[in-house]
Image (cartoon, rainbow, N blue to C red; front, side):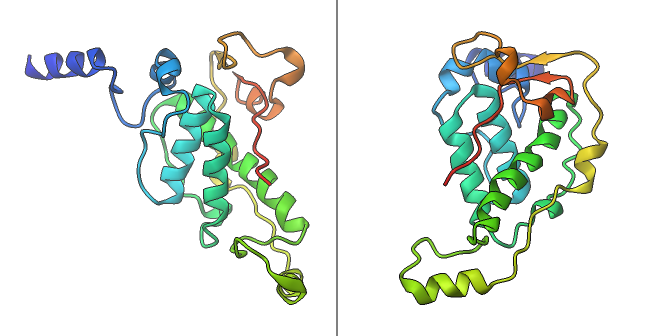
Length: 190
């Protein structure tokens, strides 16, 4: 009985019923969570991926882009080496499986322009710029596990910030492949 009361109390206080939070909990608390730091803590690639998931679901674009930039600045965290979270929640797992695609999209855009991961925050002078351009171009790739995560049996709709369903022309095709309706995330941070 104590466990049931404890769980109910957590829900009354507005805390997530479990960590990491479910999609339904995040959507239910979307207004309160908007522009708030993610509930997931830790300095690992997996923790970062879960924070991105939280920001995507609540519609906090600045938080999502900041977390993507944080990940970019961890040059030892190859996107292809993100461990499979093997998340038991199908909705959360499907979202997590798409996020590495967007990391690759954002990172490879910068890498192809001559800004490799691990670059200094300030590039002062022609010599520093030449040194960066002389580095080999190493593009990021998605982890193998991401393509093996099944699509959702039922459609999941993640509404826009104001609560309305995303307009068809702005829906992410990549998320749609997992039966998730969400607006194309803004992931380019530079």
